Length: 420
Image (cartoon, rainbow, N blue to C red; front, side, top):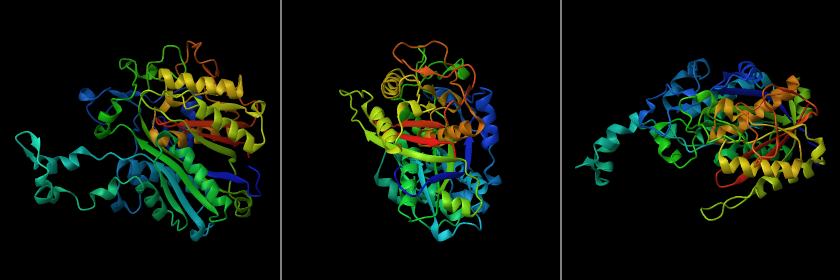
């Protein structure tokens, strides 16, 4: 970016199916330990698939304060809260950043409610097997928790994080599907660039394993390999047959380099540039990958870099037939034979949370000098002509990396990260 403000990452937090906290998360990536498995959160017999990437051994009481706040926190909020707490601690925000100049931007999905909470109310509205709307206001509402709605509004992760971290600056929430996290980083970057804040807590969260939203996900191309969960999600592989859903949250702290240095904060990586483009998608108009290609080109141009300057790509890599094909071709056309990794085989598709976790993974790769491999990539697909990193980690060749995300309505985002 051609500006006098260099924006850096000074803290990170992650809650995922392969680890809670950066150390556990990186260990799983480094050793190719995936988190896709048979689900235990609920009985999957009546659901589209019994497999997913759920977060286990997570105790929100270790992070949430005051604990009474848990009464108005959905699982999305709890995961986001925990990841933000880790990031803020690593960045040493407390007592070193002016609360009036500390902001929050979060990417979030439309949060699904716990069906057990609304079942009594719905049951009171059933007449002869049909839902009677006239009964809702008269009798059903008395069965609802008065603050029920506050658990499920998509701006609640940002609100709870802002309150807990005493962040009184700009606060925003973006609901842009899988592109939400990278868009949140772009929004926070602009806030810092304009001088409206000194530091921003930025992240994304998604819990796509709630029963209330699985009916919607029936429209998705889910993997049918339910008898071999660990091998189900195969980004860019010729035998890929669909995605696997998961849950998790990732958070980073952004601030201007001089501000970070003045307070002695650790500088983990630099935001070199970003870009976003849109490509219409409908039943009769399938995407061609032009949005991905334009996003990559714009990000490179803004950074003043060429294709040869990119060390590796952390691809969106859903594991679906069409999406992987168009993404691979766009990467090839824009960047040639650049090494590519796709990490959803480790932790599933988290929707709004995917990009944030992939940012954390990319920064950890730059810090540790090696790129995690793509899980379950065994058979190259001629329709995906890219250089996929597989089998074992690849040593970092250039200290730059491009993270890609794309929503189902083809909002594409590209984020260029560089070593500090």
